[in-house]
Picture 1 (cartoon, helix red, strand yellow):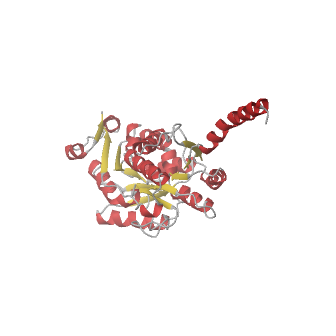
Picture 2 (picture 1 turned 180 degrees about the vertical axis):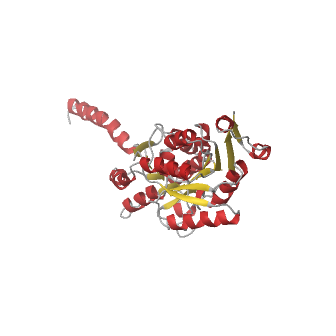
Picture 3 (picture 1 turned 120 degrees about the horizontal axis):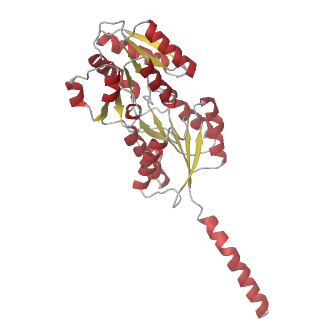
Length: 329
């Protein structure tokens, strides 16, 4: 071979080499699938990314993120999940409710993409997995266990708003698959503390307005908002209506209290999403989903907004203030 041709060959090989290296070093992609909006999810997304970082994965450095937001239109989730599968993401984080998890599970039936979920239900009761200790196939995650806390939330609401009225309203989404179980659980919790409840169903913004009309008409003493991604997405409307109609309301997350809601009781969303990020990182580093048991919350937090209480004319009992982890003044 002539020296000139050899130099040309070496030069073309050198030009091609960086492209080959880049292809070999392409970053793994995490698909983040949520029924909520990007704005609504800013805080929990930061917690998820923080969890990834604790195991050494940083967005833009050694992983990439691909986001899909349903913006409260949950019927779009199957299409969004399919988009992530078609992009061959390395893992799907399916958050904001069982409907998101089921969309991801359906889309990954024919391709082994691991799923890390965040949900508020008992994932065994709702059929996401058959065992908490050893979940099936490609699915594991973290649960807020929100629907298991109805009795405690009703107790707190009764402590804040003494009885002597027609009872409390409970706002539920009729579209949830476990509605019958949740309603039965709430009614049982109400009986255990001798507190009447009035079930209010809402799956649209108009339904929420109608629910508050009913609360006023029935002279209910307060409202418990069920744990549901739709209500989280509509929290601005619910908080606004609760203030306008002077309805003492308890939520499942400190996020609503920070934004003007009266009171909340539940697992920390920040900690739950951080744990989900840790699980996602561990799977990308080689741990099998079946070796990661479903994580349950170990601590539940009470948050109270004293400014909102004052606006409602409510004096918060010292016993409640003493047990609150977060008090907003």
